[in-house]
Figure 1 (cartoon, rainbow, N blue to C red):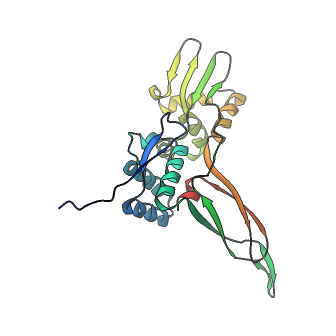
Figure 2: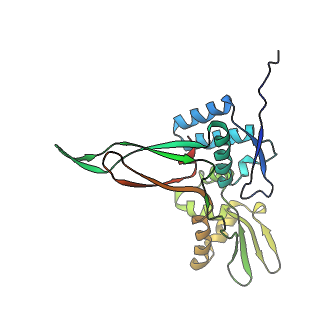
Figure 3: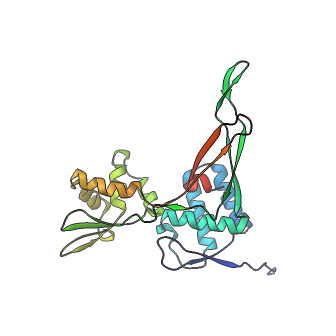
Length: 242
């Protein structure tokens, strides 16, 4: 027997790396359970997998969640969370300021509540340039990190992680006569390309990696017990997946 359902309105959000706004619905109890279980696990991979599943469930348009830029995943989740649970949420921290007590200095430990509007969390570095000219005859077009990229990088030796990240963010390599698609190259070929670059040219690519767009909110509050003025930076899924 098919039981009746509540109509689910659709919303739109403009993502950074997709030209047209993306349509989505709010969470149901099913998605809220997926989110809660992943959050309770405290495991980064579980959170990413849960986010992918939630996006696949809630986004109406046809998008590739595995290759969606991480910053777009963050933006989508924040908007879905706002429409599902409420635009305003709270983050909680303990005051770590040391105060004098009868037995010496101890952390204050006052619980601090930081209100957050999930629809007003800015994306920083939105204007970072993807096209990088390395010489008069050689350039690269970069792309933002994605879920697929994160999965691939977990299999790379730690000592090569930085080079592997730079290589994985390459979309195109071009000179005056040819264009080479990264999708037609192996990861080893792309890493070898990076290894052969002069150090100063690699630093330009590294600067792109260090400054990719991400959701970030700088906020603060004063402890009601000891008066210490706290400053906080909330950033990415690790702080907003609650």
